[in-house]
Image 1 (cartoon, rainbow, N blue to C red):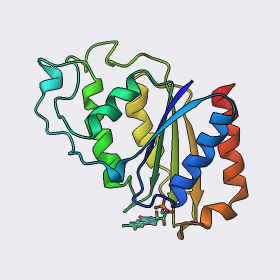
Image 2: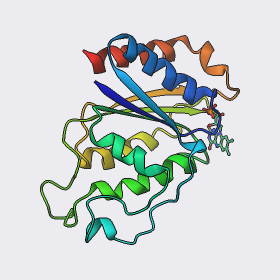
Image 3: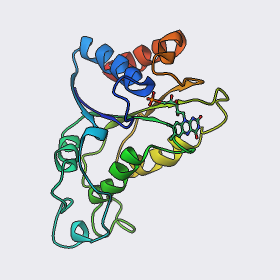
Length: 190
Ligand SMILES: Cc1cc2nc3c(=O)[nH]c(=O)nc-3n(C[C@H](O)[C@H](O)[C@H](O)COP(=O)(O)O)c2cc1C
């Protein structure tokens, strides 16, 4: 089981990265191999809408630090996306990655019953942390983004959420969320 983990926070030891590591460590103990990319350390642009991936190329034409990330997901079984909530949404670092996944769609994706260039059956683990303790707020972020990954053939997707966490170590006091991360790892690996 190959897991690719993308850290969307600029804080390497922040809440979302800590939670992602917690999940990945648990999955590793159960036999998974994990490759983690800290997006904030990479240099890349968002989608340029050049349509190269819809005309003469099967992949994104941009040669930047996101190229190996996008490539690595092609033979992965599980994709972990972790992000703090910034202004009610993903961080810019993660959003730019999501936009570049446009290259996973075939040219006639709107009317093709098989719109994705990715093999079906990959799993998504979405990790979200937010300062706001009210979990009704920002509950839309996961389903909005999951919809695109379903389109790419992802199924058996999971959300792990830490609410009311601000300082980097706050997540460590959320025993039930850490437990959920371990449970999701067991489900994914089971
Ligand atoms: C620029 C910025 C915008 C933020 N916007 C929100 C927000 O809209 N809603 C919220 O609940 N928390 C917001 N926060 C708080 C973070 O989501 C919260 O501290 C999170 O746990 C940080 O995750 P990290 O430690 O992984 O970086 C914001 C923080 C920053 C720095």
